[in-house]
Amino acid sequence: MFRYFFLSSLILFTGCNNKIKSSELDLLNGYWSIEYITYKNETFYPKGVTKLLDFYEVNDREGIRKKTQPQLNNKFLVTKDLNNFNIKFINKNYYLSFQTVWDQWEEKIIKLNENKLVLEHQEKRYHYKRFDKTN
Image 1 (cartoon, one colour):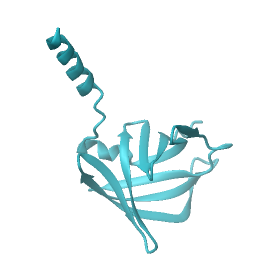
Image 2 (tube, rainbow, N blue to C red):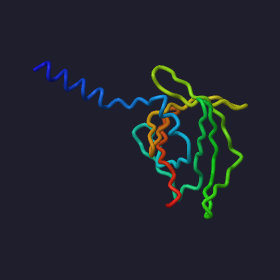
Image 3 (tube, rainbow, N blue to C red):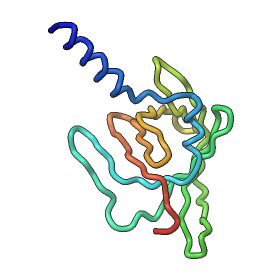
């Protein structure tokens, strides 16, 4: 009986592993829209239509994040807000490490796939979905 319990626990534990692979970091490239933010068991949704998107571009563990606004002609208006970052691998997790003249911080990558991105910063989780131009 113990053997079945152990085997079931092992399968459950390895099946729930959400670890991100180095080869998947390129999935960060593109436009992302915040769906919601979670903090201390509460969920916060953006009010109204999301006007700004986060654009990520990664090349060899270095990247940029820009704020952009979609236009009706399928182009994007890019704001002057730009942050450079490095991707660090610490304790089996990937982090986006930002540094500006005024501040430095890290955002932990919790989940990353073709359609979902979850970043954690100061106990808040930012849940993104990939922006779809057709909507």
